[in-house]
Image 1 (spheres, rainbow, N blue to C red):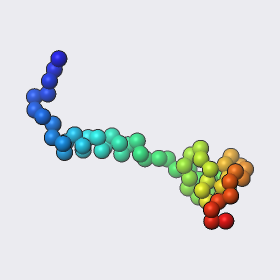
Image 2 (cartoon, rainbow, N blue to C red):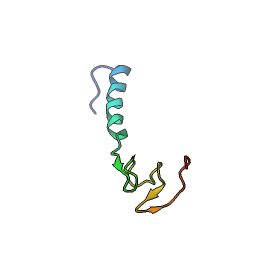
Image 3 (spheres, rainbow, N blue to C red):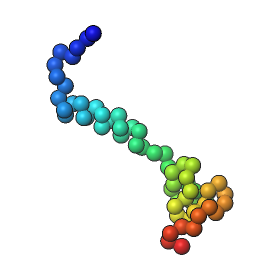
Image 4 (tube, rainbow, N blue to C red):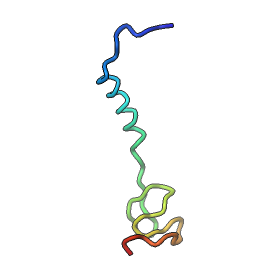
Length: 62
């Protein structure tokens, strides 16, 4: 089996992991059909409480 020639520093290792994780965390936001606010896809809109054209929940601010 192949072995690394030198020990990889914590800094190099963690930098690589941070870049990989940053790619996962970016979420595509979509506009709500009812109010136009940005929301996560396939989720109830936190602003108006609508999902797929119907009211699902009552938002906290209302």
